[in-house]
Amino acid sequence: MKPVNWRAIDLISAENVVQTPTFRKAVKKLKSNQKIDLDQAVRSLIDDPSLGAQKKGDLSFLFVYKFTMAKQHALLGYSFDQDQLTLELIALGSHENFYRDMKH
Image 1: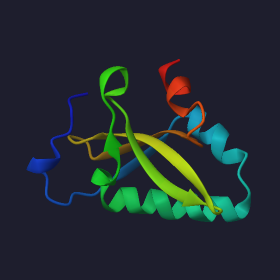
Image 2: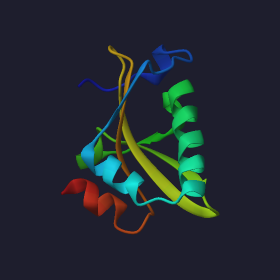
Image 3: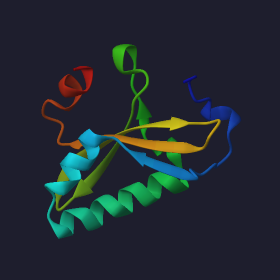
């Protein structure tokens, strides 16, 4: 997958959303109020995939969107395929061990 050039794109939105098994497993553990906050975050990313920050080095494929879920900070890891307009939801969690777990 080639890197996304956000400067060349003016407010695009994702047409397809894909979840990895890791992401699905994390969502299953959430309570209903947390799922509402997550749903709002995902909808924001669908509307504007450039909201997250692209990581560097080993994690250059990853974008991370920081948001509040049930009054706590949460990180949503995702990738975006510019050609197919596909948003892939990769990981969800708190900052603790988030990046370490992404490398494994």
